[in-house]
Image (cartoon, rainbow, N blue to C red):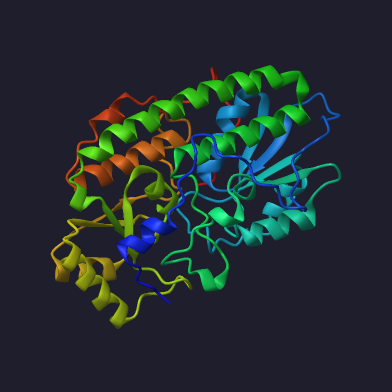
Length: 344
C-alpha cells in the first residue's frame, strides 16, 4: 500500500553517493564477461530498457551489434517478453539488464536461453550495495524489492557505463581502446550534465524542491541533488491508489505548497488530474522513465537526451531556471552510425 513518509525521513533514507561509486559484488548468476569472443565478427549484445540500451550504444558504438528488447513507452515493471525474444537472447554474447528486480520475466527468459559462454550482466547490483537500496512509496521495504530506477542519477549511470566498458573489453580486447575512448567521452558528458544540474537545481526556491509523481523514479537523483521526493500515487502493486490515499495526497500537496505534480506518458492517469484539480497544483504528464526523446537515430534519442528533457520539464514547473542544461551535448559520443535497434 502507499506509505506517506515525512520529508525528514526521506532525507535520512536518501543515499548520497560519492562521485565515483564503489561497485558492489555482482550476483553469482550474473557475472561479468571474462573470456574474449572466439569470433572475428562484432559482438552480439542485448540490452533491456532504452536508457540502458543507449549507454551500451555509446560505449560499444559501431563495433557491436546491439538489440534492445523492451519496447520504448511500455511499463518495464510489468513487461512480458514475447516468445520471439527468446531467439534474440539465445544469440547474444552479452546481455545487459538493469537488475534490482526490474526485468524479472526477461531475466528468466535470458537464463533459460543463454548460449554457452554468454554472460548476463546485472548493472544495478554492481552499482549500489544492498545497504544503499532505496525503499519508498511505490517500492515499500516490506516487499524487499528496492526502487530500481538508478539511471536518473547520472553518476550512477556513469558506473553503468564503466561496467559496460569492462565487459565489452573483456569479450573483445582487440577493441578495448575504442571502448575506453568512448567511455572517457561519455564520462565528460556526464560531468557536464552533473555540473548543469548542480547549477539549475539551486534556482528552484527551496520550498519548491519537492517531487510528487505518479510512479517514483527519482529517489536516487533526489538524494544527490537536494530534492525531496514527498510522494507517489502508484501503490506497490501497480494498481490505482485508494480514495483514502488520494485524499492524503491532496492534503499533503496543499500543506506543503507543492506547485506542480508529475505523471508520464507511460502512466497517463485521470487520478493525477483529479489530485491536481483538488489541490491547486499544476499537473504535468510529460515525464518519461525510459522512453527516449525523438526517434531512433535522432541526436536527442539518447540517455542524455532523456535526462535533459525531463529536467527541462521539472525545473521550470517548480519555479527554477533550466537554461544551464542547454549546454549539455546529448548526441552520441562516437562517430558513424551504430547498429543499435530500439524496439518501438
